[in-house]
Length: 375
Image (cartoon, rainbow, N blue to C red; front, side, top):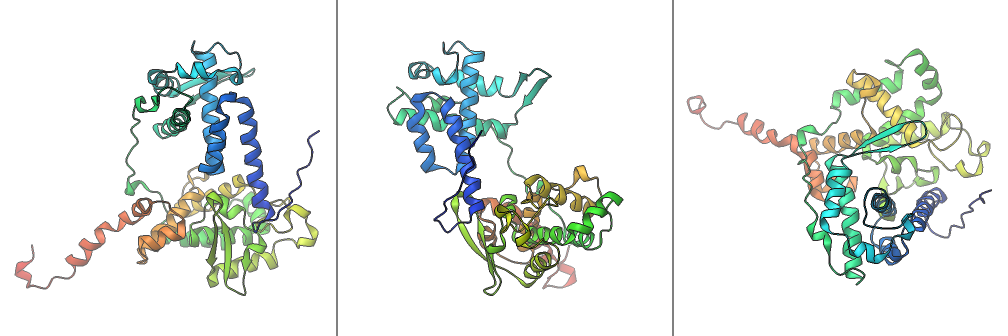
């Protein structure tokens, strides 16, 4: 029987953030225990160089590559991943990795007792797997464990250039329809209305926070009541890479959050210890799941878009909506970059691209010369 994990938290971060990160760290340790022992130095390198979610993704990719070496090639005599030797890794050539990424990973199958599962990877997914292996082989070379840096021979993977026009977002009139739907229940099915009666204030607060701040799903899910200091007009967001960010709260967001806490959320005294401080709860009085948040966003955005729930938008599309709305209201891309926590301003610039025709509209409607000079 697994022992209960007790958090002895001496940091400024709330227990739920520490618990969430600890769970990922434990998953990383489990994967590391399955991988070859000669990668131990690389594991230490990952701990200090990337976010824990990235660390886990890299380890999963490397485990998959090692399993491929055993199941699909004669590059190792090992029967289990942990038994792969360093000298066998030293014999791997760029061509072997290119075959793995370009041939095997594009489409492969896994057979279980009940079915054959078919997996396909897009170029974006293949690029992530390539990045995972590149960091490993580069490190092993720098660490003097491999004779050469074979990553230089990996084939390039072409990624589609981001197209600003392809960024999905809600227009301002659709935002109004979405907010009206959560306010009135209009557009919901009879079954959905029964749940709406119990969660409408929660759902409204979630949607308003998404649309105002462009929060990531994980950032919103992990909010606590103690995250908010209404007397000072601010709240704390816990972002990627352990960043803690104080955000000012506007009147609208303050009112919808307070309305939910006072009039719909159960009193903390009635809740189990681990969710007493959790802001957004499910009907089972647990911290709301990421899946539940996605579903409610898809439900209300589908009404705004006049489409099926399946074609509704994800929380990330509300993030895009927040970005484009701010830029449309003449906030600079640097302001929006700061608000949304983009590492690179070029990401933010994609959301500004839809305004490219604005300059043309301005000058076309501001002719200084006589009519005869106009085309």
